[in-house]
Length: 305
Length: 170
Image (cartoon, rainbow over all chains, first blue to last red; front, side, top):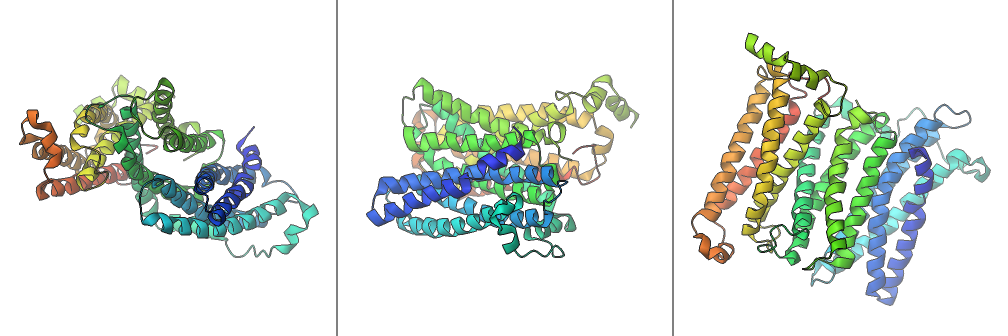
């Protein structure tokens, strides 16, 4: 099983998985059912997390198919660009869905606004993602006849390629993004440590567990900075981010998202955590340390630089 | 200069630079990154708390996390010394390196001033009062300067790989 294989496995999550979330969310709004609405938000958030792994593994699939006859590279590039746009909207939808989960159960004027934002974004994301997957299907399935319906002009660089060309043209972009990537790392890692060490018992006499959710947006800010700057690296030099080691980093990020959901949905943040909750808290620290490890070791264990 | 060359060419430094082991250069740099996460992560969260984020988190709760922050600082002092030793002739000629050291010094002085400002005046027996009293403008200014100094340290540290070209990979 290589990342190209994973791309085939995971590419149904941003489309079919997301559609299930959209149906739940729409039904919830029509029937005014808040439990269904929450389920919709959870699915949007999870779909956004898995889409990170889906998007990056597409790169491996393209590398594997590049030399194959009858495979159109311009078509793969068109799919890549369509997927990049859909990916961006998917991440924004995931972000607002997470905000919706974070303010859940708290009196907030923003909650109604947020529901509207998530609804609008999720419909747009679904349309863009359906377009991207239609183009992706056309690459290897001539029986659908889809390839003929997509206009291609190989002389014009696609959106993803022109973005990729922009980065080396301006020598300051890469170091600036690296600096911001480190700042994001610090914010995310700091919050992960404080929250999970507290759940493991550090500072229990001075810090109430109920106060911990207030720290989460700072961690999410750090993650968002790293997602944006990480994508700058990825789109600029996709050939550096292939192979199982980089995919492991992305898979660990998905595990980090699941870990966060465990506390936000089931355990809340309550006093007197049991051994299982402590295990999950310890695993959060281990997961994000491993993410730092994988990112750092890319030049030695992966294919970068 | 001869002295610096002798440090750089010592057996240990050669091993760190050239060994084909993840425990050598890659591992030491990884520890330096994780140490940065501990120091800057906890300090930045503290600064942002002073500036009004996460108001339910009591300020004195951070006192329990400061030992972890200092642990990160000492990890970085040790790994940073090794990373300096293996490239000492180039780094000591790189002005950016002194900029980085200055930012770290300022940030460390800053956190001590901030702790004095917040936890210094009130006697320890009156711990609850610390979180009741509104934060002074001076504390808020120190929180902002702390964020700026750490950002400066990260920026100048990252730029070491671009200004003056100090080592092979970074």
